[in-house]
Image (tube, rainbow, N blue to C red; front, side, top):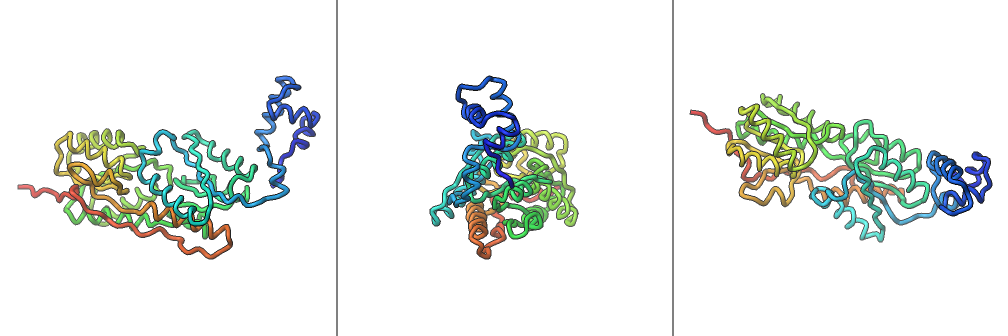
Length: 337
């Protein structure tokens, strides 16, 4: 990949190198129109400070990066990611590596711009990818940039040898078979955004497993907030009173669903969460949930990336198997008289 230099920008714009330097560094000496032209071309070509120096000497930074498309003010409300990041940090602490974390909001493309800038500036040796989207552009971009990466996903063929694989079908089977054993036949699954690979695969796995057990599954797409869980479960139970079981794609949705069940007086409805956390353990009715060991996932994905950077064979390429934790919301179907 050719690096963009001040001299290259100057040649394309037919300006002096001094003028381009002034424009890029916000110094006086050029007109507003010239500054605009320089900055627009620099942005188009991906120029960043120190990129030319990095091209001459691609030294190790002893840092890995994570870019999350999340509202920074909401990250602390997601126990799964807090535990995941704790695992990343614990693995890095053993090697004196540093973590560069960026939360870029939900506007499309901001995460891609961050990877381009990190590559141009030589900020990180590699990155960890989460929340893989269908047709996700990041793996191809990172390969083009020559930036090492490891991703969490259920499809190892996306980047062979660079995926920490988790078993979506196995997780779905644990949840569905448990509810089926309690006699449930009408099931609601409140999913997360279906443009995420894992949510798409969860929905398909729940449907396949439920149909195998003679169950009638329904699906409603959502974000991951407790407010959405409460709103959706309330609406669906009013419209479909025959529903007796609910699966939510995370603990916050489960918390909202539990609030809805309490408000509607539906103590006959079983509830299970795809994520376990302290939120599922507290309250008058602790919630049945999958223990997916996110801290261990963080450690394993980080170690997989570090092994990749060192040219070593990976110790782990699969996430630890999930375990179902049965709690008070595992309610059998009431006997009808």
